Image 1 (tube, rainbow, N blue to C red):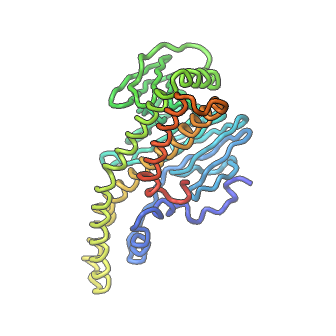
Image 2: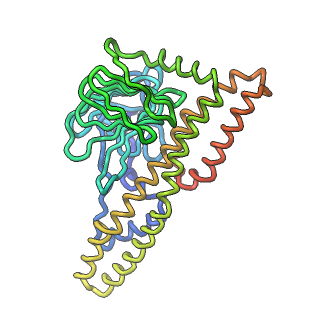
Image 3: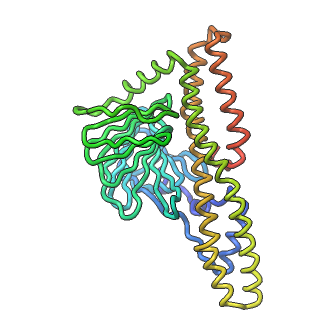
Amino acid sequence: MSRANATHTEDRNCIFKAAALFLVLGAVLLLGFPVTAFAQEALTVYVEGEANAKNLQGKILPLGIGDPLKSGESVITKTTGRADLELPNKSLIQVKPNTVFTLSEVELEGEKQTVLATTVGSVSYRLNKFTGRGPSIRTAGAAAGVRGTDLTVYAGADGSTLVVVEQGAVAVEAVGKEVTLEKNEAVEVKPGSPPGEKFTWIGKQIDYSTWNQGKMEEFLKDPVAGIDRVALQLEIYRKGLADTLPLLRKAEAEVNKVYEELKKAVEAKDEARAAQLRDELLKGVGKDRRILFLNMRFYALSYLSLRRYVVGGLYLQMKSRYITKPTAPVYQEFLERYRDILRKYEETIVPHLVEADI
């Protein structure tokens, strides 16, 4: 059964459930305040093989043609699976086999931006022109800014990224450094590192399995350095979350204050004052709070995805490789790094996730 036949009655409001203000925002509806859901969606236009979607409630369901993919939801394909998604402006996203792809949103400079994220696997994009801010195409270790262009993004099981541009131009950024790619150019980015030297790529599309196998062989030559690189990227997400939280708490306190004033205005039948306060919740402190909440969720979920699909995969590789040599120094050193990542995840990330995330 496709997701089109599944019940999604809570999808639009699920994103608010992790916040202390969920009940407040629900009550504001009763006071005549229109809360707008985050609206970016993609439409599934083609499915082949085993392709599933993880929805906002954390359920994994078969993906079918005609199913929407909402902000915060993911497509997960197996070896035989692939899926094509269409954005509102008719841009096409082709999710290849063995891939985890997520559609989400952040807000930058007061403007909402779509994030198209590949945690592992490969995704091809045929992007038309966007009005306003174009999407950010992301992997564990890099972000690509585009408007109208054709490109393929490869996200390795070691956290590496390869971006290949077929048409147009793409700015690839990592750890504050940027490389601009044009037609038939490519660049590789290791996690927690700036982009490497760009190179020319002309010919057939890169085989993801072969490229990924090469990245894993490179990782196994020095697994401690490999997991250290991933840890650097995780720290970027963790710091982003830590910087956002105090601002979010302040904004929540301000929203609570305005909400209490709104209740009093409604009880006093002061329609002019109530309208002013609703506007403040929609465009002022309420908007600030929604922006910060979106960004907090982005950092927390980015850390979660990288830990689950990349760090978890590296751990299984090492456990299998050293199953007969569990006391090997390199394995013990790797485990020390791995446990430190898990500790930070439990202490600083899990408190900001909801049950459906995990």
